[in-house]
Image (cartoon, rainbow, N blue to C red; front, side, top):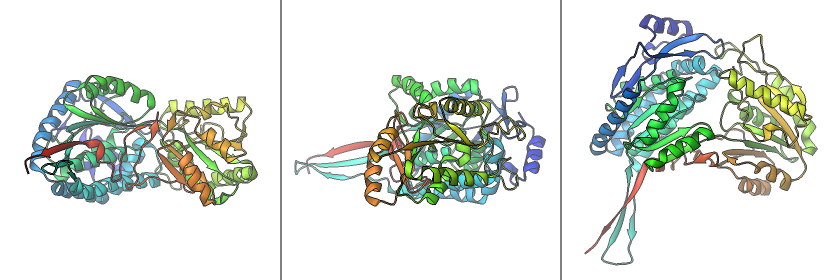
Length: 500
């Protein structure tokens, strides 16, 4: 476990003013627990250098956190109202805003994303506490007319109980706040296992939760290493004390968690992998589409679940789009997230780089041409891959089937609307889809035809707190954010009153 002096040195090196945000222990039942004999390293993906050693929470302590959450929930649901929870969420939102620059720097050094992107994430992350602070007092039921005039049917939305939350590394703050804001608004307690690669952002949120005065045991955060992650996931799924699991991650892991949860029949909401199509029709504004592709495909170097994966360009504007996109990409700059002028940072680890390289190799072997990039940027480090544009990508290329999750832009030519809709829907995944057209009849037609949970029409940026975020098919189920976000954390109870 890292010492106080090491934490202070890290804060000084990266200009983090509030050192209280830098935590290396587990947060259980309102206490910070440290395990000096069991730790794991958190590294800067841009340099490979170790940042800090974080406590590897023992399984017995994770079990204790689950029990604490269960005990806290039973008290919490009786002693708080929606309005009281609203005030706590608003306080937490204000604390995130006050500490946004420090939170952004913590995100950048452990995740690798440029500081501008990290600032965007913290703004996005805090918005969920603001949004759900406004939803908390408005979780209402109904008075339903009965067929029998002597009866009344009342419905109540009640918090489901203690919940388990499993979050990924690509949005280490926002994936916690989007889930926790809804859970807390509903009146649930939570145990959170953050990604092994990025626990510092999660623990910084815990520090603010403590400062905001959340009741002990209502929020618990248990960092663990990669090896222990599987054990904790199984424990969450099989624990009878946790009544719901919320998971963001790969489809393969989602299937495993779903299977492991069958013994307890708990409620699940999963946001899983994607294979998002990005379609540009001949009648689109090409300049707007190019900027949409940059924003959508290359956000965080392509490491987001809603990133475009397959870019279908209609033949009439194919060459123009390709050339303008290449020109726009030439103006982007790879580098460390805290370096001046950096627009795109490293990938999270060497496995991510290897996947990008394999998709490029496969597409080129099948006839694709490299328009820009194509290689690892060795001068910057092993985890930096050049932003790569491929033209003439054949439909049988691997990139059409698998999500790359990296800075690879494959351009695929198409002729007709019917053809491209069929291509776009030829996948088991259905998280997000994008298309560009100035024909508003087509906007409605194609928007309804794409088999995805979220569609961006003439925009590459769709995410905000007001959006019901989620997919269909192998991309999961349930919705996060929006007025629907609380629904996955409540149960609907009906009470029939007779003899009126």
